[in-house]
Image (cartoon, rainbow, N blue to C red; front, side):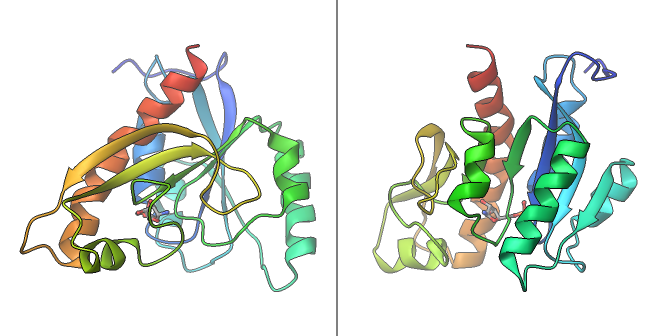
Length: 193
Ligand code: GRF
């Protein structure tokens, strides 16, 4: 991988709420010469999000917003995104639902990763629900974000086989490993068209 300064890349912000393993994989990808994005901001609603450590390690600006007043939080985030000239928003384990009016600022430029083969299992507890339904496969999906939860146009999906012995935890782990490859691939697909 050839490191890049990012001067000709699209400035991106990644929104997280938890562990941030997808953030880490996106940061690594963004340093690749071929990456269309350059991550210059990490946004979270959770000051305790483990993923914030990656922003520190890679010296990326991080901002925490309290969502008790969602409208106000979104207003402040929007200002921060504009201030930093952010063109692309990648949601990666961000646990808040963004409003229609927020999303319209980034039409076609806001993406999400979800741990199921959408349109199946939107929302939470995806792995448990897939196991309860005796699915043979689950997987992950990268899609455009619209105001309807986990419903925007699908960009890429990766199927993962479910074994009889799988638990929600083992399945989550297997799928997460694929998520780390799928998100960069999806961004390449969108921006190399
Ligand atoms: C991932 O499974 C993602 O698909 C879902 O939340 C999880 C976040 O994991 N939306 P991480 O914080 O990126 O490790």
